[in-house]
Length: 319
Image 1 (tube, rainbow, N blue to C red):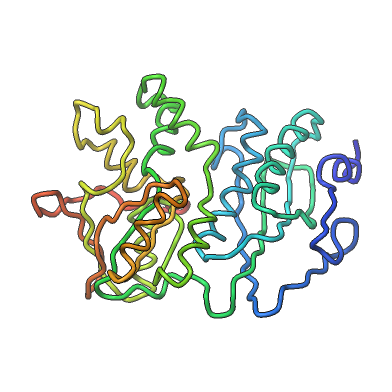
Image 2: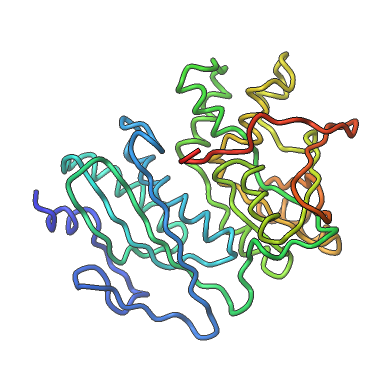
Protein backbone atom coordinates (compact mmCIF):
# COMPACT_ATOMS: atom_id res chain seq x y z
CA UNK A 1 0.00 0.00 0.00
CA UNK A 2 1.49 3.33 -1.08
CA UNK A 3 1.41 6.54 0.96
CA UNK A 4 -1.36 7.96 -1.23
CA UNK A 5 -3.39 4.73 -1.10
CA UNK A 6 -3.09 4.88 2.70
CA UNK A 7 -4.41 8.45 2.77
CA UNK A 8 -7.25 7.77 0.33
CA UNK A 9 -8.34 4.57 2.07
CA UNK A 10 -8.24 5.65 5.69
CA UNK A 11 -8.10 9.44 5.98
CA UNK A 12 -9.99 11.03 3.08
CA UNK A 13 -13.59 12.00 3.81
CA UNK A 14 -16.00 14.74 2.72
CA UNK A 15 -15.30 18.13 4.33
CA UNK A 16 -18.34 20.32 3.59
CA UNK A 17 -17.14 23.18 5.84
CA UNK A 18 -13.79 23.53 4.06
CA UNK A 19 -13.12 25.41 0.81
CA UNK A 20 -10.31 23.02 -0.19
CA UNK A 21 -9.24 19.94 1.75
CA UNK A 22 -7.11 16.79 1.37
CA UNK A 23 -5.51 16.35 -2.04
CA UNK A 24 -3.80 19.68 -2.72
CA UNK A 25 -0.68 21.42 -1.41
CA UNK A 26 -2.64 23.17 1.32
CA UNK A 27 -6.17 23.42 2.65
CA UNK A 28 -8.24 26.57 2.28
CA UNK A 29 -10.42 27.64 5.22
CA UNK A 30 -12.99 30.37 5.78
CA UNK A 31 -13.33 31.55 9.36
CA UNK A 32 -16.80 32.85 10.20
CA UNK A 33 -17.26 36.60 10.56
CA UNK A 34 -16.55 37.93 14.05
CA UNK A 35 -14.48 34.90 14.99
CA UNK A 36 -10.83 34.40 15.90
CA UNK A 37 -8.93 31.26 14.92
CA UNK A 38 -7.53 29.16 17.79
CA UNK A 39 -4.71 26.78 16.77
CA UNK A 40 -2.92 24.11 18.83
CA UNK A 41 -0.59 21.19 18.13
CA UNK A 42 0.07 18.08 20.21
CA UNK A 43 2.34 15.12 19.50
CA UNK A 44 2.03 11.58 20.88
CA UNK A 45 5.23 9.54 20.65
CA UNK A 46 5.16 5.77 20.88
CA UNK A 47 7.00 4.51 23.94
CA UNK A 48 6.78 7.94 25.59
CA UNK A 49 3.09 8.86 25.60
CA UNK A 50 1.63 5.40 25.01
CA UNK A 51 2.64 1.76 24.90
CA UNK A 52 3.30 0.45 21.41
CA UNK A 53 0.72 -2.32 21.85
CA UNK A 54 -2.08 0.13 22.77
CA UNK A 55 -5.36 -0.69 21.05
CA UNK A 56 -5.30 1.39 17.82
CA UNK A 57 -8.96 2.40 18.05
CA UNK A 58 -8.39 3.86 21.51
CA UNK A 59 -5.19 5.46 20.28
CA UNK A 60 -7.05 7.14 17.41
CA UNK A 61 -9.51 8.55 19.93
CA UNK A 62 -6.81 9.81 22.27
CA UNK A 63 -4.74 11.37 19.47
CA UNK A 64 -7.61 13.74 18.72
CA UNK A 65 -8.92 14.01 22.29
CA UNK A 66 -5.77 15.61 23.69
CA UNK A 67 -6.04 18.32 21.02
CA UNK A 68 -9.75 18.85 21.59
CA UNK A 69 -8.89 19.41 25.24
CA UNK A 70 -6.78 22.42 24.24
CA UNK A 71 -9.75 23.87 22.34
CA UNK A 72 -11.92 23.30 25.40
CA UNK A 73 -9.46 25.19 27.60
CA UNK A 74 -9.66 28.18 25.25
CA UNK A 75 -13.45 28.14 25.01
CA UNK A 76 -13.11 27.48 21.27
CA UNK A 77 -15.44 25.49 19.04
CA UNK A 78 -13.28 22.88 17.26
CA UNK A 79 -13.61 22.98 13.46
CA UNK A 80 -10.65 21.49 11.57
CA UNK A 81 -7.61 19.28 12.15
CA UNK A 82 -4.54 18.02 10.34
CA UNK A 83 -2.93 14.67 11.15
CA UNK A 84 0.69 13.68 10.58
CA UNK A 85 1.74 10.06 11.06
CA UNK A 86 5.14 8.45 11.31
CA UNK A 87 4.58 4.69 10.93
CA UNK A 88 7.04 1.80 11.16
CA UNK A 89 4.84 -0.10 8.68
CA UNK A 90 1.53 0.48 6.91
CA UNK A 91 -0.63 -2.23 8.50
CA UNK A 92 -4.10 -1.94 6.98
CA UNK A 93 -6.00 -3.40 9.97
CA UNK A 94 -4.15 -1.13 12.42
CA UNK A 95 -4.83 1.95 10.29
CA UNK A 96 -8.50 1.01 9.87
CA UNK A 97 -9.01 0.75 13.64
CA UNK A 98 -6.98 3.90 14.34
CA UNK A 99 -8.91 5.99 11.80
CA UNK A 100 -12.25 4.67 13.08
CA UNK A 101 -11.38 5.79 16.61
CA UNK A 102 -10.15 9.15 15.34
CA UNK A 103 -13.18 9.87 13.16
CA UNK A 104 -15.74 8.69 15.74
CA UNK A 105 -14.56 11.45 18.07
CA UNK A 106 -14.15 13.92 15.19
CA UNK A 107 -17.78 13.34 14.17
CA UNK A 108 -18.93 13.80 17.76
CA UNK A 109 -17.42 17.30 17.81
CA UNK A 110 -17.93 18.32 14.17
CA UNK A 111 -14.22 18.31 13.31
CA UNK A 112 -13.08 17.90 9.69
CA UNK A 113 -9.71 16.34 8.83
CA UNK A 114 -8.28 18.64 6.17
CA UNK A 115 -4.72 17.44 5.61
CA UNK A 116 -1.50 16.19 7.14
CA UNK A 117 1.46 14.01 6.24
CA UNK A 118 2.67 10.41 6.42
CA UNK A 119 6.18 9.00 6.55
CA UNK A 120 8.00 5.83 7.58
CA UNK A 121 9.65 5.94 10.99
CA UNK A 122 9.07 5.30 14.72
CA UNK A 123 5.38 5.51 15.66
CA UNK A 124 4.59 9.20 16.13
CA UNK A 125 1.18 10.89 15.92
CA UNK A 126 0.81 14.65 15.57
CA UNK A 127 -2.40 16.67 15.27
CA UNK A 128 -2.82 20.36 14.65
CA UNK A 129 -6.33 21.47 15.57
CA UNK A 130 -8.12 24.68 14.70
CA UNK A 131 -11.21 26.17 16.25
CA UNK A 132 -13.26 29.34 16.34
CA UNK A 133 -13.97 31.64 19.26
CA UNK A 134 -15.77 35.01 19.21
CA UNK A 135 -13.39 37.96 19.06
CA UNK A 136 -12.13 38.84 22.53
CA UNK A 137 -13.91 35.89 24.21
CA UNK A 138 -11.14 33.28 24.31
CA UNK A 139 -10.36 31.86 27.73
CA UNK A 140 -6.70 32.46 28.58
CA UNK A 141 -4.22 31.68 31.33
CA UNK A 142 -3.65 35.36 32.05
CA UNK A 143 -6.98 36.41 33.53
CA UNK A 144 -7.01 35.07 37.10
CA UNK A 145 -7.92 37.69 39.71
CA UNK A 146 -7.70 37.92 43.49
CA UNK A 147 -10.80 36.36 45.02
CA UNK A 148 -11.52 34.04 42.10
CA UNK A 149 -12.73 30.56 42.93
CA UNK A 150 -10.57 27.77 41.51
CA UNK A 151 -12.56 24.95 39.92
CA UNK A 152 -11.75 21.60 38.33
CA UNK A 153 -13.93 19.30 36.27
CA UNK A 154 -14.29 15.55 36.50
CA UNK A 155 -12.14 13.24 38.61
CA UNK A 156 -8.41 13.71 39.14
CA UNK A 157 -5.79 11.01 39.24
CA UNK A 158 -7.58 8.15 37.49
CA UNK A 159 -5.40 8.28 34.35
CA UNK A 160 -2.22 8.25 36.44
CA UNK A 161 -3.64 5.41 38.51
CA UNK A 162 -4.39 3.51 35.30
CA UNK A 163 -0.77 3.96 34.25
CA UNK A 164 0.38 2.72 37.65
CA UNK A 165 -1.74 -0.39 37.09
CA UNK A 166 -0.15 -1.02 33.69
CA UNK A 167 3.29 -0.55 35.24
CA UNK A 168 2.34 -3.03 38.00
CA UNK A 169 2.95 -0.45 40.72
CA UNK A 170 -0.57 -1.04 42.06
CA UNK A 171 -3.17 -3.81 41.75
CA UNK A 172 -6.65 -2.30 41.37
CA UNK A 173 -9.98 -4.06 41.91
CA UNK A 174 -11.68 -4.77 38.58
CA UNK A 175 -14.17 -1.89 38.69
CA UNK A 176 -11.49 0.68 39.50
CA UNK A 177 -9.15 -0.88 36.93
CA UNK A 178 -11.65 -0.45 34.10
CA UNK A 179 -12.45 3.13 35.08
CA UNK A 180 -8.82 4.16 35.42
CA UNK A 181 -7.68 2.52 32.18
CA UNK A 182 -10.55 4.22 30.34
CA UNK A 183 -9.44 7.58 31.78
CA UNK A 184 -5.89 6.92 30.56
CA UNK A 185 -6.63 5.45 27.14
CA UNK A 186 -9.88 7.19 26.17
CA UNK A 187 -10.04 10.65 27.80
CA UNK A 188 -13.16 12.75 27.29
CA UNK A 189 -12.35 16.33 26.20
CA UNK A 190 -14.50 18.92 28.00
CA UNK A 191 -15.45 20.95 24.93
CA UNK A 192 -19.02 21.67 26.08
CA UNK A 193 -17.72 22.98 29.41
CA UNK A 194 -15.21 25.25 27.69
CA UNK A 195 -17.95 26.76 25.54
CA UNK A 196 -20.21 27.24 28.58
CA UNK A 197 -17.44 29.06 30.48
CA UNK A 198 -17.22 31.92 27.99
CA UNK A 199 -18.16 35.02 29.93
CA UNK A 200 -18.05 33.17 33.25
CA UNK A 201 -14.41 32.17 33.78
CA UNK A 202 -11.48 34.58 34.10
CA UNK A 203 -8.84 31.98 33.17
CA UNK A 204 -8.62 28.35 32.10
CA UNK A 205 -6.20 25.53 31.28
CA UNK A 206 -6.49 21.83 30.58
CA UNK A 207 -4.81 19.43 33.00
CA UNK A 208 -2.29 17.44 30.98
CA UNK A 209 0.85 17.54 33.16
CA UNK A 210 -0.82 17.41 36.58
CA UNK A 211 -3.07 19.79 38.51
CA UNK A 212 -0.33 21.67 40.35
CA UNK A 213 1.92 22.08 37.30
CA UNK A 214 -0.91 23.35 35.13
CA UNK A 215 -2.43 25.59 37.79
CA UNK A 216 1.06 27.07 38.16
CA UNK A 217 0.89 28.12 34.49
CA UNK A 218 -2.23 30.16 35.29
CA UNK A 219 -0.60 31.66 38.38
CA UNK A 220 2.61 32.58 36.55
CA UNK A 221 0.74 34.04 33.56
CA UNK A 222 -1.62 36.02 35.80
CA UNK A 223 1.05 37.01 38.38
CA UNK A 224 -1.11 35.56 41.15
CA UNK A 225 -0.94 32.95 43.90
CA UNK A 226 -3.37 30.25 45.03
CA UNK A 227 -4.54 28.34 48.06
CA UNK A 228 -5.92 24.87 47.35
CA UNK A 229 -7.67 22.49 49.75
CA UNK A 230 -6.60 18.88 49.29
CA UNK A 231 -9.78 17.55 50.89
CA UNK A 232 -11.88 19.28 48.22
CA UNK A 233 -10.12 17.65 45.26
CA UNK A 234 -12.32 15.20 43.32
CA UNK A 235 -10.33 11.99 43.68
CA UNK A 236 -10.76 8.44 42.45
CA UNK A 237 -13.11 6.33 44.57
CA UNK A 238 -10.18 3.92 44.96
CA UNK A 239 -8.38 6.46 47.14
CA UNK A 240 -11.50 7.25 49.15
CA UNK A 241 -11.93 3.56 50.04
CA UNK A 242 -8.24 2.79 50.52
CA UNK A 243 -6.99 1.99 54.02
CA UNK A 244 -3.71 3.68 53.17
CA UNK A 245 -5.18 7.18 53.31
CA UNK A 246 -3.31 10.07 51.73
CA UNK A 247 -0.14 8.17 50.81
CA UNK A 248 2.49 9.16 48.27
CA UNK A 249 0.79 7.30 45.40
CA UNK A 250 -2.44 9.21 45.97
CA UNK A 251 -0.67 12.56 46.10
CA UNK A 252 1.34 11.75 43.01
CA UNK A 253 -1.65 10.63 40.95
CA UNK A 254 -4.07 13.36 42.03
CA UNK A 255 -1.70 16.32 42.07
CA UNK A 256 1.09 15.50 39.66
CA UNK A 257 0.21 12.46 37.57
CA UNK A 258 -1.07 14.22 34.48
CA UNK A 259 -3.18 13.08 31.53
CA UNK A 260 -6.45 13.94 33.26
CA UNK A 261 -7.50 16.24 30.40
CA UNK A 262 -9.96 17.94 32.72
CA UNK A 263 -10.29 21.72 32.91
CA UNK A 264 -8.92 23.85 35.73
CA UNK A 265 -10.39 27.35 35.68
CA UNK A 266 -10.89 30.41 37.84
CA UNK A 267 -14.04 32.48 38.10
CA UNK A 268 -15.38 35.28 40.28
CA UNK A 269 -17.64 34.49 43.22
CA UNK A 270 -20.46 36.32 41.39
CA UNK A 271 -20.64 33.42 38.90
CA UNK A 272 -20.47 30.65 41.49
CA UNK A 273 -24.14 29.67 41.19
CA UNK A 274 -24.09 29.75 37.38
CA UNK A 275 -21.05 27.49 37.30
CA UNK A 276 -22.55 25.12 39.88
CA UNK A 277 -25.64 24.86 37.66
CA UNK A 278 -23.45 23.48 34.85
CA UNK A 279 -23.09 20.24 36.82
CA UNK A 280 -26.66 19.25 35.94
CA UNK A 281 -26.70 20.94 32.55
CA UNK A 282 -23.59 19.12 31.32
CA UNK A 283 -23.85 16.01 33.52
CA UNK A 284 -20.29 16.69 34.62
CA UNK A 285 -18.88 16.95 38.16
CA UNK A 286 -17.33 20.32 39.03
CA UNK A 287 -15.44 20.94 42.25
CA UNK A 288 -14.49 24.26 43.84
CA UNK A 289 -11.05 23.51 45.24
CA UNK A 290 -9.56 26.81 46.36
CA UNK A 291 -9.10 30.49 45.64
CA UNK A 292 -6.77 32.95 43.95
CA UNK A 293 -4.82 35.24 46.29
CA UNK A 294 -2.13 37.85 45.85
CA UNK A 295 1.51 36.83 45.90
CA UNK A 296 3.35 33.96 44.24
CA UNK A 297 3.10 30.17 44.24
CA UNK A 298 0.48 27.73 45.42
CA UNK A 299 -0.14 26.55 48.99
CA UNK A 300 -1.80 23.17 49.34
CA UNK A 301 -3.64 22.83 52.63
CA UNK A 302 -5.17 19.91 54.51
CA UNK A 303 -8.66 20.15 56.01
CA UNK A 304 -7.18 21.43 59.29
CA UNK A 305 -5.39 24.26 57.47
CA UNK A 306 -1.87 22.86 57.69
CA UNK A 307 0.37 23.15 54.63
CA UNK A 308 1.11 19.91 52.78
CA UNK A 309 4.67 19.45 51.53
CA UNK A 310 5.01 17.96 48.06
CA UNK A 311 7.60 15.76 46.40
CA UNK A 312 6.94 17.07 42.86
CA UNK A 313 4.53 19.30 40.98
CA UNK A 314 4.00 17.55 37.66
CA UNK A 315 5.35 15.93 34.53
CA UNK A 316 8.15 17.51 32.51
CA UNK A 317 9.61 15.79 29.44
CA UNK A 318 13.07 17.25 30.05
CA UNK A 319 13.28 17.33 33.85
